[in-house]
Length: 169
Image (cartoon, rainbow, N blue to C red; front, side, top):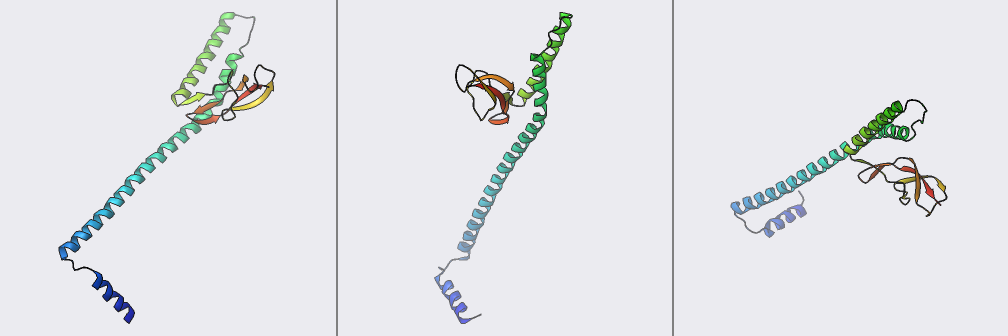
């Protein structure tokens, strides 16, 4: 050890007030307690952050699964609205339409139970966050949605699929 280092140590010891062993122990206890409290707070924050991330992962997984159901729902909806107008037995045609309507209702309920809502279209003003323009036609008010070409869906505030629409020009 050099002479300068020895001098620095002596000066540091001289600057320390004379503390009793009990006072030194109490100071160490207070320091350990403070460190422990900080570590506990850090651990609690980590637990909260982990729980929030886990919930986000669950929601993302659920959304990925539901995205597979949406095209099927759209196809049933399209089939329902474009049912055949045959000159055959009206009772059979009505039963077909009722069956397709029931399936569409079931799919809609499944989507809704998972927090998926349809995006409103016809009569609404065009909003690029929720809608995708598939074309324009003459209409009463520019920017107003005239017709829905493909349904749009959102989960909370997150758009899963924008609605494809025809807007007035």
